[in-house]
Image (cartoon, rainbow, N blue to C red):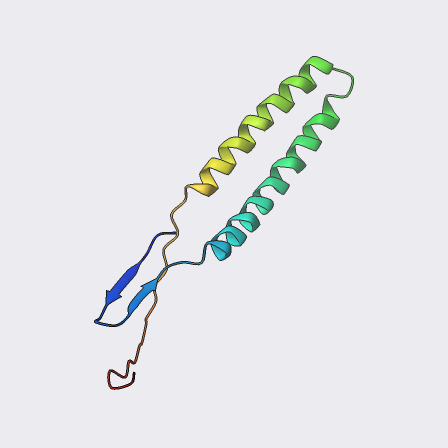
Length: 94
């Protein structure tokens, strides 16, 4: 988990960082949507190649490579967000 902001006072540390579980949920949704489209294309192509086992094996291999490329692309896409953080600290409290 990377820390976006660290603030140190005499008594406290404040760390602001993305929640990794939320990032994974977002990534999983993007991955599922993209893979569903890719799998639909594969099924369509396989239907056209019924009976030609060598062509089917080649298609499956090609689509496996496309799937790995897709996963790599989604996992390594940088997402940017903006935020405002308003904090109040009572230094008189113990």
